[in-house]
Length: 317
Image 1 (spheres, rainbow, N blue to C red):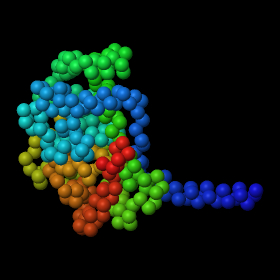
Image 2: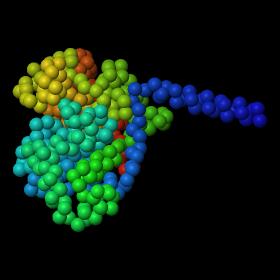
Image 3: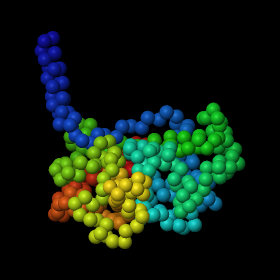
Image 4: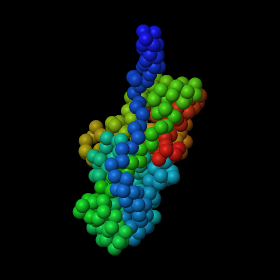
């Protein structure tokens, strides 16, 4: 019996020793989504893909945030009603519930507040909630579904709640890097692990950490060099938080984007100016860190970034 206890203790010690290096990592795995009501999530999914949320039924939320394109649309800026062009790159909807604020400038505190923006924006969906409600009230299916799932039936607040329920379900756990964090030490290659070490050593981790690997703080774009002066043609969208706070210290300050599934969400940055992930890393290294990295170093960081692509509904994105 004493020998058995000793062996069990040894196994526990060895298991702890293998896990210990990962306990101090600044990145945490994405948890599996907690679905409170599958029925409400399904209603939200239908609404998210319903063109009746826009003026003259031209486009849906999914038009700019397609689940087939990493939760974005692959465009520099999205197209709204009547072909109007947006002012800023559309961020991914995947893992958006992990962000501490919504929109590049952080003007919405949460997903519920975020919904109002695209619906009423004249160059996006150019509609209103009363208009949306009046359309859906003509649909017996929605009337029945809302009556079944919400005590107050089909209302504006319940439409919003259903969409938020769907968006909160859009977590993408079990990336290869998440598996590594969960102690699958064979989940990453040597070069990918080296890329992660460089990512930390260079200082990328100071802004891109936590569960979302970003999305939890604001930062100025161009700390070590003037990105906007070098790029030229400064627009209102470049002003970032300044447009919200009118505080000069917030000029060119943005919510740090999540790096989850970043390999799928080109073009990059708020201006959609960079199509290639290698180029995006080089820009970050120069303008945010004040360093120059050779192509091999950049390549290894990109190899690491590619391990951040997760799964949705147990299927790889």
